[in-house]
Image 1 (tube, rainbow, N blue to C red):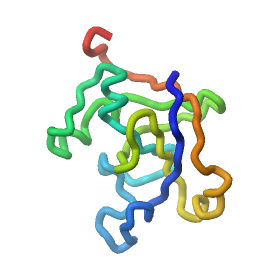
Image 2 (image 1 turned 45 degrees about the vertical axis):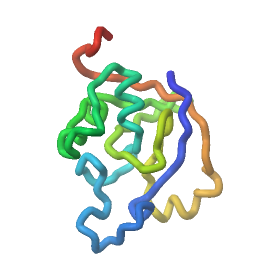
Image 3 (image 1 turned 90 degrees about the vertical axis):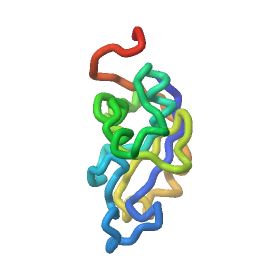
Length: 130
């Protein structure tokens, strides 16, 4: 289990407008949807012994196992999240949850920044002796 800082974002959090071709797309190229989270891929890859290098091309980074072979389970309520995005302010044990903009604007003050325990599960071949 990993105690993580939890924040929330929506499609316009990065300043893009609906007219922009990358609006609503995650780092991995999929559209945002409930259950998507942004993570620090270097931090979590290292914790799980998975390969990831910021020197790789964005295309190679987007295909890294941390994005496609792991799930994050909120221990308090058994909610499952998938890491498909990154964020400039998402560093270390930090999970940034995507929510629809109207929900974000309505509930932002209720959520604020929280700390929750997540179980990070890797579904793949063992790596680095793990």
